[in-house]
Image (tube, rainbow, N blue to C red; front, top):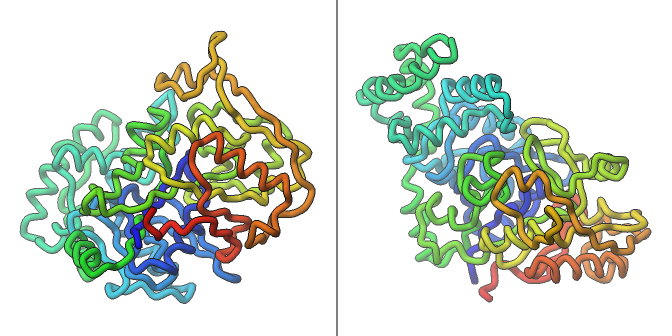
Amino acid sequence: MSNVTVIGAQWGDEGKGKIIDWLSNRADMVVRFQGGNNAGHTIVVGDKTYKLSLLPSGVVQGKRSIIGNGVVVDPWSLLEEIAKVGAAGLSVTPDLLVLAENACLVLPLHRELDALREEASSQKIGTTKRGIGPTYEDKVGRRAIRAIDLKDPASLPGKIERLLAHHNVLRRGFGAAEVDAGALLKLLNEIAPKIAPFLGSSWRELDAARKAGKRILFEGAQAVLLDIDHGTYPFVTSSNTVAGQAAAGAGVSPRAIGTVLGIVKSYTTRVGEGPFPTELKDATGEKLGERGHEFGTVTGRKRRCGWFDAVLVRQTCVTGGVDGITLTKLDVLDGFDEIKICVAYELDGQTLDYLPADANLQARLTPVYETLEGWKDTTAGARSWAQLPANAIKYVKRVEELIGAPVALLSTSPDRDDTIMVQDPFVDR
């Protein structure tokens, strides 16, 4: 058996939450390895819907869940999320959840700086204003407050002084009030006893699980096209979202991340700013958005919609290290007379089979489409190939051919059980 790493292979919102939840049933442990509470995973179980941001999706299945060191953690948001799922009948205790003691903390000053920058900029990045980027900056700048620091109150004043020596200069530049060191120390001391029970040496626990033959599911947030290196820069997130980050963000060997499963929506969506070659600003785009309920889990922002872009997904399968994909929301395409797939781009009279790195060039790309015949029968709720219309199967097969990766799982509704397994991701290939 193999471990499995799940990543988004477009611009996020591909339905990772449902697939990770489905896979969690067969895993022993689930690990978040990057991002923060700017992520949003929606899980539907019967008549209950759970919207998770920091908590690994494994908590819904009652599986041991770890927030890895690669995640930046807003402790107040974490406790709020634990309380929220608790009110829905899901108890999250230290027996279920471990927070890596070397994870960096998102503080109020990070959220404030995020908002100050976005509001002052003439070119919006589309940040969620959750303070994720500024926290990663402090991590790299070696001035961040880490979770383990909450257990050492004597050292906190000096670490806060170092942090504020940087931040208060920035705040003065924005005309904002400086952060009071005493007030921040008080906030951290107040929350410390609530967070401390969850802290642990996550890398040691993962090493023990690996040696015991446990199956580990590594859960990514955002997606490859939002990767700080491989995404549509600068309209990206502040962390690496590719599968390789699972090793660094959890503290395991690269050999331990197992099979890499890329989650891919049957069409394309994007939240916020940035290039989007196949975006449809017409009735078809509106129809995709309405049928797919395309609103961001975290921000509630309306998602931009367009046809499936095989050029992008072929590229993210390479840069993201994808072994196979899960194709989600196939049911949203039910009833279309014809369905288009982007197979190349045109730029200044040239045909491109990849996304150039230059943001200005990305914005000028014209998609080259291949048109397939749609289907009238429904795919919604299908749980086997036999229940799919012939043209839907042709569509799936054509996607496989164009992106150069096999479909391992197929999702036909938000419900956990409406999933067709073509190839078991947990089985070594």
